[in-house]
Image (tube, rainbow, N blue to C red; front, top):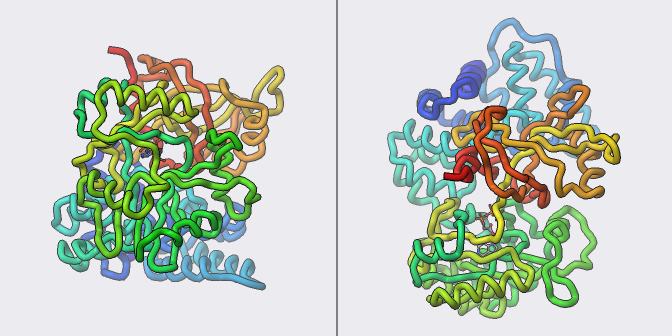
Length: 503
Ligand SMILES: Nc1ncnc2c1ncn2[C@@H]1O[C@H](COP(=O)(O)OP(=O)(O)OP(=O)(O)O)[C@@H](O)[C@H]1O
């Protein structure tokens, strides 16, 4: 298929706010694709080359710009091959080779195609929020219900692969995609509960009430001596966390997949700040902070997949294999015991508690009500849309943040407020140094960013607003911290912000 057909569809889905129209547009395109084109096209529409991030910066893309071609003759296969070559280039002379491949690619592209390729390569097209739409479009194009497609995506972690199998091998092919030890599974997520009483009333006494630790999510896979550790977004961090790898190797089993939280502790056993835990996930970091794992789920043990088993069974498996590393929890508590657990979690410096239905299966990638989180304050994960230059004591620093919520249907982020509260001098310095890397535009007052940086905001609630486009504004928002473990797809939706309005 010709590239221009993809460019047109991408523009169409970007221009409409209607979820149905987006799904129909993508499904029509998918149905027309030859089998070899499916994976690259699905990847591009979701905003990334099939080969993943190519490591190409804005400057390289600018340097490759060439006068546009008059005729749209580029095919999907040619573009995919060129991007593959760019991604694979390594060693001496690779920079020059990449530039040459890219320049030839741009020279063969028409102007709209050049714009599309630029946005694809610089990450500007990345629309994590499109994933739900894309899943439904794959199902529609394959003539299948949404559920098996969604499940295959959660287990494979790959939209292009899911599309290829759904369109090529149908329902049987999708059913063959199973949990694979060594390949990350999308983590199950929680819904916020207003209070402990509400969550307990909804779920009943058949729950596990667990500390909600303020660390970072980990998924540990072990098959014999081979261990892999993944983050919440399924980034492989095995190399950065040797102590977790070692610990996994000592567990009494042949193969296992564990879900949990990891955290560094102070000498007195209290949690260290989240940023310190996250810093250990970087490429090379000082190893003086030792990470401790706290497991709360077991998805596989010695050949048995447990995803569809109730939590009670999965916890029994967890106890067989890693009882010493379980997160503090109580099961079947009375309301009083649940309250005591909440108070104990806060007293120990943790964020709150999770209430989990002991009957529920592991809903990979889903934010359902079977897991509910209870924290003392409201928090939202929002995307930074820009920052204003500070004044007074903050002159010369990028300060007041513009905050956006996610459009659940893949549209542009919706601005819901601004804040500079909670920003320490260290954060101001970091923002000023870092934000230009995400710059989309700037004027006299502010630098505007691509929607990539996720920040966790504490707030008192939301109020009706005529100033902001979503009709809602944050009340007393303050910055808690940046969330480098999250992407735009994890940002709270505009509906979640609206739900915080009184009444
Ligand atoms: N006992 C626990 N069970 C499950 N998750 C836990 C637990 N303790 C801490 N966590 C962390 O809390 C998160 C659960 O909340 P949620 O599913 O809403 O994810 P989140 O969007 O990352 O939330 P948050 O911003 O509150 O960490 C998990 O991703 C995990 O990192």
